[in-house]
Image (cartoon, rainbow, N blue to C red; front, side, top):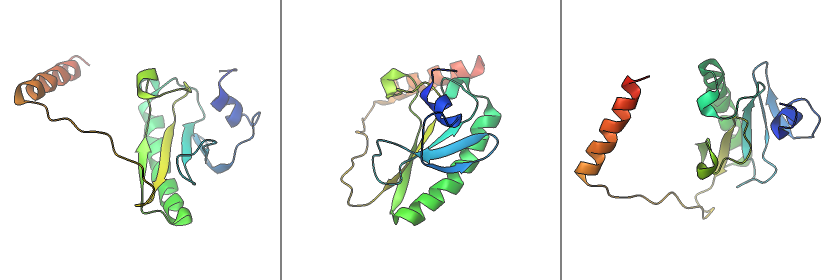
Length: 138
């Protein structure tokens, strides 16, 4: 896609700090990192989000993510990392080209985890039934 910022980065029309590249994916540092070493793993082929990305590309993204996450943790001396994919605006997706975040974490970085809810058994059962029904229809 000609106006996609990630497509432009992949074509080297916009500079980025690449840490990895193969035939299927690239990885580069996020320009607005949560923590130093925050890296994006991006398929070279344009797909709007994870739901439209072929399974073969998603599999390669995860293989590369494992390799890069290990290097990020070692290079940044972090205590762990988060992996995230924001899908659709409600989940925080702002660039509509599939990408995965590797965010190195320190025990002292002050970042919080998502708040948790306590749902009743009836609500859990209803959600479970709904998900199973959708999976059976696929």
